[in-house]
Length: 281
Image 1 (tube, rainbow, N blue to C red):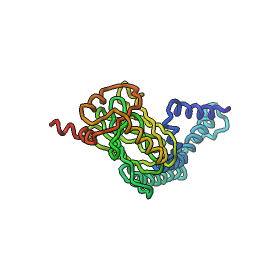
Image 2 (cartoon, rainbow, N blue to C red):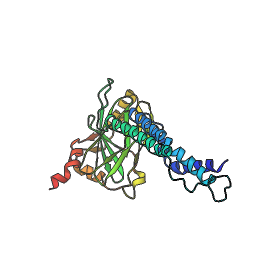
Image 3 (cartoon, helix red, strand yellow):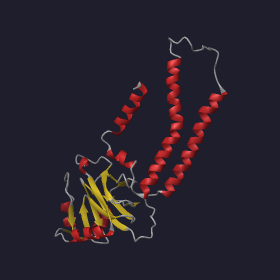
Image 4 (cartoon, rainbow, N blue to C red):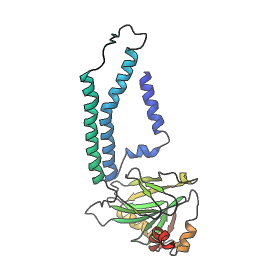
């Protein structure tokens, strides 16, 4: 195996080692994730038009014009070349223009707050609260909640309303796309859709303290029947989240929390968390 190939493979392994989310991004299962992957791959191909020739020329010049070379032509009076100047300026300029156009269009098309239109059924709403160090998911239309677990029906748009009751965090389901920050006293909106039944990993992609590594959750994408069964299952639990006192107990810092269900939830809790600093003034 050549030295160049060894260096390339080592770089790839080091880059991807221990980071499943990077691999998941290139295996999307949702409409948003698929379109984001296309943008990433297109950008890599365009940038390779510059990067690969530069690497090849660098190696070529180092080998050909080394001090021990006897074949390289020595031209002390040579100073410039119009052809080279045009090559190193015009091609990068064109690629930057193309990338800029792609970026501008994708920002508009893939705006996280932009609704996903389908004709299957109304979207599912999930209110997300980032805590130390767990995720609370409230389903306001069903008045239920869960810790570190999401169930959604396949091919149905999901509207995530996201906030934080601690430090700034980041909500990310790599295979569905679009990570977005959870911020204190603010509400971020994220629209996603899953087009394939399966179990997908959700993570916090922003360091938030000693329990950060345990802020993981599973996203179960199921058919409508299984989704309704899960809703009924959660409603059968005795644990409830109907008062702010119940929430205060739940929000105490804890690490590596297991999945928990709440059969009844006061939907006002989510909005009280967003506005609590304003209420304290």
